[in-house]
Length: 259
Image (cartoon, rainbow, N blue to C red; front, side):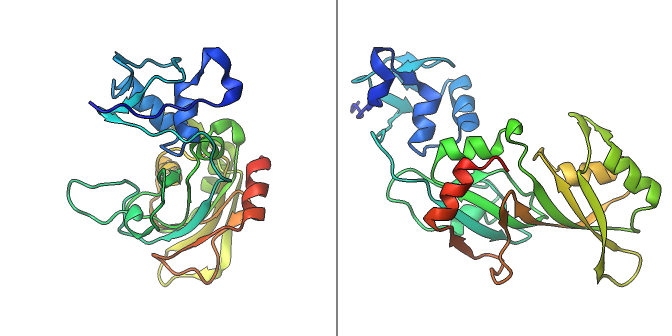
């Protein structure tokens, strides 16, 4: 079996650098994703299966699924893509059923891979961010960052004043309480029939959270479009299925901004 290069940042010292941090900084995945790999026994350091908390030492090869990993000693500034996800694409690298995925339309990278910052479900559309930095992806997705997500939501039958009050005060979901920071009717956007559009803002990104919140008060979301993530808004001219890259200055602002 071939050995891989194992490069550790100079500041890590003789104790090495935490494995998940090192792999994330090399653009191999977000810290959460890499931690799941480690917990599943997919990562090996030398001849030993890695455990959470392990550190990578200079000269010791690292393997994922028995394949050697090449760790970059120093990476250029993080890159960030804005992608307009259409309905009907999955946020996964490969689908067993052969359905299209968001990764199929992204430009190729010379090293590392694109990491999705959060998700949108199959029936949702709108702004999805990708980065080649696992560290940046982890920072943007971590609950402590409290980064705002803004959506335009079409609700079947609309929401009563009482329903809107409950959604702002908080509803109980299976994974804990949740509430909208802001919720307002979109008077400028109307549908035929009883469907009504609303603009909502959350400061977290749990799985299908907007849909589950609306279902918790007895209504149903029929369309959901993410229009903003933190300081980044979905560009008006970016068509579904297309992407554009943030310039270096905006990426720098994103790295240092909290929300």
